[in-house]
Length: 330
Image (tube, rainbow, N blue to C red; front, side):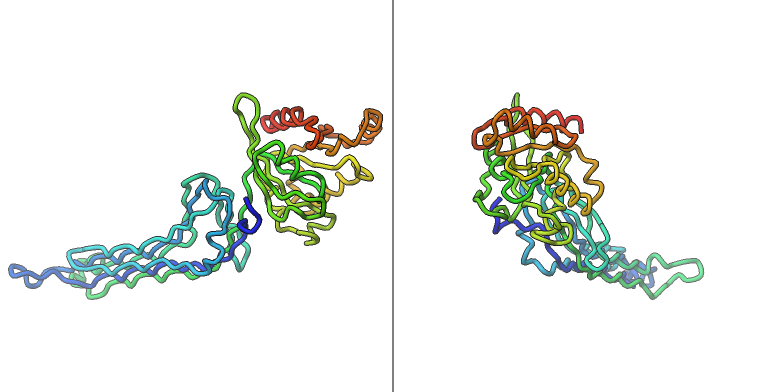
Protein backbone atom coordinates (compact mmCIF):
# COMPACT_ATOMS: atom_id res chain seq x y z
CA UNK A 1 0.00 0.00 0.00
CA UNK A 2 1.95 2.99 -1.25
CA UNK A 3 1.42 6.43 0.24
CA UNK A 4 0.27 8.41 -2.84
CA UNK A 5 -2.34 5.78 -3.69
CA UNK A 6 -3.92 5.41 -0.27
CA UNK A 7 -7.18 7.35 0.03
CA UNK A 8 -9.43 6.73 3.03
CA UNK A 9 -11.89 9.64 2.71
CA UNK A 10 -14.05 10.82 -0.18
CA UNK A 11 -17.08 13.08 -0.46
CA UNK A 12 -19.43 12.40 -3.35
CA UNK A 13 -22.75 13.69 -4.63
CA UNK A 14 -25.24 10.89 -5.27
CA UNK A 15 -28.35 11.39 -7.37
CA UNK A 16 -30.73 8.47 -7.71
CA UNK A 17 -33.07 8.10 -10.66
CA UNK A 18 -36.65 9.29 -10.61
CA UNK A 19 -39.49 6.81 -11.01
CA UNK A 20 -41.30 6.50 -14.31
CA UNK A 21 -44.87 7.78 -14.63
CA UNK A 22 -47.80 5.39 -14.58
CA UNK A 23 -49.74 5.06 -17.81
CA UNK A 24 -53.28 6.33 -18.35
CA UNK A 25 -54.18 3.91 -21.12
CA UNK A 26 -57.36 2.11 -22.21
CA UNK A 27 -57.60 -1.19 -24.00
CA UNK A 28 -58.79 -0.88 -27.61
CA UNK A 29 -59.39 -3.58 -30.22
CA UNK A 30 -61.68 -4.28 -33.14
CA UNK A 31 -63.78 -6.57 -30.97
CA UNK A 32 -63.68 -4.25 -27.94
CA UNK A 33 -63.47 -0.59 -29.00
CA UNK A 34 -64.27 0.65 -25.49
CA UNK A 35 -62.18 -1.55 -23.24
CA UNK A 36 -61.26 -0.79 -19.66
CA UNK A 37 -58.13 0.87 -18.26
CA UNK A 38 -54.93 -1.12 -18.70
CA UNK A 39 -52.23 1.43 -17.99
CA UNK A 40 -49.08 -0.11 -16.53
CA UNK A 41 -46.88 1.14 -13.71
CA UNK A 42 -43.76 3.20 -14.18
CA UNK A 43 -40.39 1.63 -13.49
CA UNK A 44 -38.46 2.59 -10.38
CA UNK A 45 -35.51 4.92 -10.60
CA UNK A 46 -31.99 3.56 -10.34
CA UNK A 47 -30.37 3.11 -6.92
CA UNK A 48 -26.88 4.12 -5.81
CA UNK A 49 -25.47 0.94 -4.26
CA UNK A 50 -22.32 0.20 -2.24
CA UNK A 51 -20.71 -3.21 -2.79
CA UNK A 52 -17.87 -4.73 -0.79
CA UNK A 53 -14.76 -5.87 -2.66
CA UNK A 54 -12.03 -7.63 -0.68
CA UNK A 55 -9.51 -6.90 -3.46
CA UNK A 56 -9.67 -3.16 -2.77
CA UNK A 57 -7.60 -1.49 -0.02
CA UNK A 58 -8.28 2.16 -0.76
CA UNK A 59 -10.93 4.61 -2.00
CA UNK A 60 -8.54 5.97 -4.61
CA UNK A 61 -10.82 4.95 -7.51
CA UNK A 62 -13.52 7.26 -6.10
CA UNK A 63 -11.28 10.22 -5.32
CA UNK A 64 -12.15 12.11 -8.50
CA UNK A 65 -15.73 10.82 -8.78
CA UNK A 66 -17.52 13.87 -7.41
CA UNK A 67 -20.94 13.16 -8.92
CA UNK A 68 -22.73 9.84 -9.37
CA UNK A 69 -26.09 9.68 -11.12
CA UNK A 70 -28.37 6.70 -11.67
CA UNK A 71 -30.77 6.63 -14.63
CA UNK A 72 -34.51 7.29 -14.45
CA UNK A 73 -37.24 4.68 -14.63
CA UNK A 74 -39.32 4.43 -17.81
CA UNK A 75 -43.03 5.17 -17.98
CA UNK A 76 -45.62 2.41 -18.00
CA UNK A 77 -47.61 1.51 -21.11
CA UNK A 78 -50.76 -0.31 -22.24
CA UNK A 79 -51.57 -3.93 -21.52
CA UNK A 80 -50.50 -3.22 -17.90
CA UNK A 81 -46.87 -3.23 -19.03
CA UNK A 82 -44.50 -1.94 -16.37
CA UNK A 83 -41.80 0.47 -17.50
CA UNK A 84 -38.16 -0.58 -17.28
CA UNK A 85 -36.36 0.25 -14.05
CA UNK A 86 -33.52 2.75 -14.15
CA UNK A 87 -30.03 1.28 -14.20
CA UNK A 88 -28.41 1.11 -10.78
CA UNK A 89 -24.96 2.53 -10.13
CA UNK A 90 -22.77 0.18 -8.09
CA UNK A 91 -19.82 1.67 -6.21
CA UNK A 92 -17.31 -0.99 -5.20
CA UNK A 93 -15.56 -0.16 -1.93
CA UNK A 94 -13.01 -1.87 0.34
CA UNK A 95 -14.14 -3.80 3.37
CA UNK A 96 -14.35 -1.49 6.36
CA UNK A 97 -15.97 1.40 4.46
CA UNK A 98 -18.45 3.51 6.43
CA UNK A 99 -20.98 5.84 4.80
CA UNK A 100 -22.23 9.02 6.48
CA UNK A 101 -24.55 11.84 5.51
CA UNK A 102 -22.30 14.76 4.61
CA UNK A 103 -24.64 17.41 6.04
CA UNK A 104 -25.59 15.79 9.35
CA UNK A 105 -22.69 13.39 9.87
CA UNK A 106 -25.25 10.67 10.59
CA UNK A 107 -24.01 7.09 10.23
CA UNK A 108 -25.81 5.27 7.44
CA UNK A 109 -24.17 1.94 6.78
CA UNK A 110 -20.91 -0.01 6.74
CA UNK A 111 -19.49 -2.63 4.41
CA UNK A 112 -17.68 -5.48 6.16
CA UNK A 113 -18.05 -8.49 3.84
CA UNK A 114 -17.06 -9.35 0.28
CA UNK A 115 -19.95 -8.89 -2.20
CA UNK A 116 -22.12 -7.31 0.52
CA UNK A 117 -24.47 -4.78 -1.07
CA UNK A 118 -26.29 -1.89 0.60
CA UNK A 119 -28.50 0.68 -1.07
CA UNK A 120 -26.98 4.06 -0.22
CA UNK A 121 -29.55 6.22 -2.07
CA UNK A 122 -32.88 4.76 -3.18
CA UNK A 123 -34.35 5.51 -6.57
CA UNK A 124 -37.83 7.00 -6.84
CA UNK A 125 -40.78 4.63 -6.90
CA UNK A 126 -42.60 4.31 -10.21
CA UNK A 127 -46.13 5.71 -10.42
CA UNK A 128 -49.16 3.43 -10.62
CA UNK A 129 -51.07 3.14 -13.89
CA UNK A 130 -54.76 3.91 -14.20
CA UNK A 131 -55.59 0.21 -14.02
CA UNK A 132 -55.08 0.45 -10.23
CA UNK A 133 -57.72 3.16 -9.83
CA UNK A 134 -60.74 1.53 -11.43
CA UNK A 135 -63.68 0.84 -9.14
CA UNK A 136 -67.38 0.13 -9.27
CA UNK A 137 -68.11 3.85 -9.27
CA UNK A 138 -65.25 4.87 -11.56
CA UNK A 139 -64.74 2.26 -14.26
CA UNK A 140 -62.75 4.51 -16.59
CA UNK A 141 -60.19 6.50 -14.54
CA UNK A 142 -58.25 8.82 -16.78
CA UNK A 143 -55.43 9.57 -14.36
CA UNK A 144 -52.30 7.78 -13.24
CA UNK A 145 -49.58 8.51 -10.68
CA UNK A 146 -46.43 10.37 -11.63
CA UNK A 147 -43.19 8.73 -10.57
CA UNK A 148 -41.46 9.77 -7.36
CA UNK A 149 -38.46 12.07 -7.77
CA UNK A 150 -34.99 10.72 -7.12
CA UNK A 151 -32.85 11.89 -4.21
CA UNK A 152 -29.92 14.28 -4.50
CA UNK A 153 -27.58 13.87 -1.51
CA UNK A 154 -23.96 14.36 -0.50
CA UNK A 155 -22.31 11.44 1.25
CA UNK A 156 -18.97 10.83 2.93
CA UNK A 157 -17.23 7.48 2.57
CA UNK A 158 -14.59 6.70 5.19
CA UNK A 159 -12.35 3.67 5.25
CA UNK A 160 -11.51 2.02 8.58
CA UNK A 161 -8.93 -0.68 8.04
CA UNK A 162 -9.93 -4.20 8.99
CA UNK A 163 -6.96 -5.67 10.85
CA UNK A 164 -6.46 -7.92 13.85
CA UNK A 165 -3.73 -5.81 15.43
CA UNK A 166 -3.14 -2.06 15.39
CA UNK A 167 0.33 -0.67 16.12
CA UNK A 168 0.14 2.38 18.39
CA UNK A 169 3.12 4.56 19.20
CA UNK A 170 4.89 7.86 18.79
CA UNK A 171 6.84 8.57 15.59
CA UNK A 172 10.12 6.63 15.45
CA UNK A 173 8.89 3.98 17.90
CA UNK A 174 9.91 1.27 15.42
CA UNK A 175 6.41 0.32 14.22
CA UNK A 176 7.25 0.31 10.51
CA UNK A 177 10.47 -1.60 11.11
CA UNK A 178 8.59 -4.27 13.07
CA UNK A 179 5.96 -4.59 10.34
CA UNK A 180 8.62 -4.96 7.65
CA UNK A 181 10.37 -7.72 9.62
CA UNK A 182 7.38 -9.85 10.62
CA UNK A 183 5.42 -9.49 7.36
CA UNK A 184 5.93 -8.94 3.65
CA UNK A 185 4.88 -5.27 3.90
CA UNK A 186 7.44 -2.71 2.77
CA UNK A 187 6.62 0.55 4.55
CA UNK A 188 8.91 3.55 4.19
CA UNK A 189 11.45 3.60 7.02
CA UNK A 190 13.73 6.47 8.01
CA UNK A 191 15.11 8.10 11.14
CA UNK A 192 12.81 11.11 11.28
CA UNK A 193 9.27 11.72 12.56
CA UNK A 194 6.21 10.94 10.44
CA UNK A 195 7.97 8.68 7.97
CA UNK A 196 4.69 6.79 7.81
CA UNK A 197 2.10 9.12 6.32
CA UNK A 198 -0.51 6.47 5.53
CA UNK A 199 -1.53 3.23 7.26
CA UNK A 200 0.22 0.08 6.10
CA UNK A 201 -1.17 -3.44 6.29
CA UNK A 202 0.90 -6.57 6.67
CA UNK A 203 -0.07 -10.23 6.88
CA UNK A 204 1.98 -12.02 9.51
CA UNK A 205 2.50 -15.75 9.06
CA UNK A 206 2.21 -17.73 12.26
CA UNK A 207 2.65 -21.36 13.23
CA UNK A 208 0.91 -24.13 11.24
CA UNK A 209 0.10 -21.84 8.30
CA UNK A 210 -2.03 -19.56 10.44
CA UNK A 211 -1.84 -15.80 10.00
CA UNK A 212 -3.10 -12.46 11.28
CA UNK A 213 -3.15 -8.92 9.90
CA UNK A 214 -1.28 -6.01 11.45
CA UNK A 215 -1.96 -2.34 10.68
CA UNK A 216 0.80 0.24 11.13
CA UNK A 217 -0.95 3.49 12.03
CA UNK A 218 0.94 6.77 11.43
CA UNK A 219 2.61 7.99 14.62
CA UNK A 220 0.48 9.61 17.28
CA UNK A 221 1.70 12.65 19.18
CA UNK A 222 0.34 14.29 22.31
CA UNK A 223 -2.68 16.35 21.28
CA UNK A 224 -3.51 14.17 18.28
CA UNK A 225 -7.18 14.05 19.32
CA UNK A 226 -7.21 17.86 18.93
CA UNK A 227 -5.83 17.65 15.40
CA UNK A 228 -2.13 18.06 16.18
CA UNK A 229 0.42 16.23 14.08
CA UNK A 230 -1.48 13.99 11.70
CA UNK A 231 -4.47 14.52 13.96
CA UNK A 232 -7.68 12.54 13.81
CA UNK A 233 -7.22 11.44 10.24
CA UNK A 234 -5.80 8.02 11.07
CA UNK A 235 -7.00 7.39 14.62
CA UNK A 236 -10.25 5.95 13.27
CA UNK A 237 -8.35 3.01 11.75
CA UNK A 238 -7.65 1.75 15.28
CA UNK A 239 -11.39 1.34 15.93
CA UNK A 240 -11.49 -1.84 13.81
CA UNK A 241 -8.58 -3.63 15.49
CA UNK A 242 -9.31 -6.29 18.09
CA UNK A 243 -5.87 -5.95 19.72
CA UNK A 244 -3.79 -2.79 20.25
CA UNK A 245 -0.02 -3.27 20.33
CA UNK A 246 1.57 -0.25 22.02
CA UNK A 247 5.22 0.32 21.10
CA UNK A 248 7.55 2.42 23.21
CA UNK A 249 11.31 2.50 22.45
CA UNK A 250 13.76 1.39 25.11
CA UNK A 251 15.57 4.75 24.97
CA UNK A 252 12.40 6.62 25.98
CA UNK A 253 12.80 8.93 28.99
CA UNK A 254 9.89 7.27 30.80
CA UNK A 255 8.14 4.25 29.28
CA UNK A 256 5.14 4.37 31.63
CA UNK A 257 4.57 8.10 30.98
CA UNK A 258 4.79 7.64 27.21
CA UNK A 259 2.35 4.73 27.35
CA UNK A 260 -0.11 6.78 29.43
CA UNK A 261 0.05 9.66 26.93
CA UNK A 262 -0.78 7.29 24.09
CA UNK A 263 -3.60 5.77 26.12
CA UNK A 264 -5.02 9.20 26.89
CA UNK A 265 -5.04 10.19 23.21
CA UNK A 266 -7.06 7.09 22.37
CA UNK A 267 -9.43 7.76 25.27
CA UNK A 268 -10.00 11.35 24.16
CA UNK A 269 -10.71 10.19 20.62
CA UNK A 270 -12.99 7.30 21.55
CA UNK A 271 -13.31 5.94 25.12
CA UNK A 272 -14.45 2.56 23.78
CA UNK A 273 -10.93 1.95 22.46
CA UNK A 274 -9.82 1.29 26.03
CA UNK A 275 -12.03 -1.81 26.09
CA UNK A 276 -9.77 -3.50 23.55
CA UNK A 277 -7.04 -5.94 24.53
CA UNK A 278 -3.64 -4.26 24.92
CA UNK A 279 -0.02 -5.39 24.70
CA UNK A 280 3.07 -3.28 25.37
CA UNK A 281 6.26 -3.96 23.41
CA UNK A 282 9.46 -2.16 24.40
CA UNK A 283 11.26 -1.82 21.08
CA UNK A 284 14.98 -1.33 20.40
CA UNK A 285 15.70 -3.69 23.30
CA UNK A 286 19.08 -4.56 21.77
CA UNK A 287 20.24 -1.32 23.45
CA UNK A 288 19.61 -2.82 26.89
CA UNK A 289 21.54 -5.26 29.02
CA UNK A 290 19.90 -7.56 31.56
CA UNK A 291 20.44 -5.10 34.41
CA UNK A 292 18.67 -2.26 32.60
CA UNK A 293 15.78 -4.56 31.66
CA UNK A 294 15.34 -5.51 35.30
CA UNK A 295 15.21 -1.84 36.29
CA UNK A 296 12.69 -1.01 33.57
CA UNK A 297 10.42 -3.92 34.52
CA UNK A 298 9.91 -2.42 37.97
CA UNK A 299 8.00 0.54 36.57
CA UNK A 300 6.04 -0.97 33.67
CA UNK A 301 2.25 -0.54 33.48
CA UNK A 302 -0.02 -3.42 34.44
CA UNK A 303 -0.53 -5.23 31.13
CA UNK A 304 1.32 -7.92 29.12
CA UNK A 305 4.79 -6.49 28.32
CA UNK A 306 7.85 -7.81 26.53
CA UNK A 307 11.15 -6.57 25.11
CA UNK A 308 11.76 -6.85 21.37
CA UNK A 309 14.32 -5.84 18.78
CA UNK A 310 13.28 -5.88 15.15
CA UNK A 311 16.84 -5.24 13.95
CA UNK A 312 18.37 -8.01 16.08
CA UNK A 313 15.29 -10.25 15.60
CA UNK A 314 14.90 -10.73 19.36
CA UNK A 315 11.63 -11.48 21.11
CA UNK A 316 9.62 -11.51 17.88
CA UNK A 317 8.49 -15.13 18.13
CA UNK A 318 7.32 -14.53 21.71
CA UNK A 319 5.52 -11.42 20.47
CA UNK A 320 3.70 -13.43 17.79
CA UNK A 321 2.70 -16.03 20.37
CA UNK A 322 1.35 -13.35 22.69
CA UNK A 323 -0.52 -11.61 19.88
CA UNK A 324 -2.07 -14.86 18.68
CA UNK A 325 -3.26 -15.87 22.13
CA UNK A 326 -4.62 -12.37 22.77
CA UNK A 327 -6.49 -12.31 19.47
CA UNK A 328 -8.18 -15.61 20.27
CA UNK A 329 -9.03 -14.48 23.79
CA UNK A 330 -10.54 -11.29 22.35
